Image (cartoon, rainbow, N blue to C red):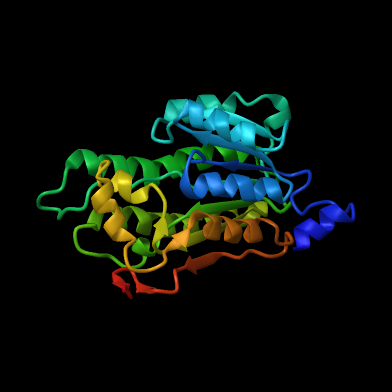
Length: 264
């Protein structure tokens, strides 16, 4: 309502004149975040691996207000080349949303697939670091710059057969805290959003395209939607420069803990 009233009466939108870079923007939370930040007036640099989906996203965002970068966050050279090669008019970032990440498989450490482990560590931890390092030179000092890392309740509470995924998200939590300490001297805020169960492509990816098994994750209750998380990110990104909403745990009403969900 506040945003629509601002637009109706000619007041600038809260994100006007600011640019946000969102990784993992081709689906789920990243895509919803791109739309929410565009609604708030931000220009968007949207990043992902799937070129066609990125093109469709840019076409759906306000004309001239979005720029696409195609890369896999796990590929450090590709990250550096894409972000380092931004045109001058896009080489300034006010808000970085480190959303790209993944879960692969659900198995004990005794039987887990080592390739799945590599994918999770490389994407959820190293990818976040690669992107942050590449974007930091583009963030202004003492001007309200903000980095938002997407964590998970799994980073706070481990569960059986998810040890490596949980560990990767616990690393995001520690990285967020450490980055906040490292960057406070530059006036850069660092924050984290840790969702519980969100109905996205997450489970289809985890279960390698087994849609029936993925559907059981969301059965019998109302999970969060990607737009719920995006709205929180939009709120955080539009606080005054003096405010850092540093850590948000966001759960569906039916979820009390990582593995405690009221169904039926």
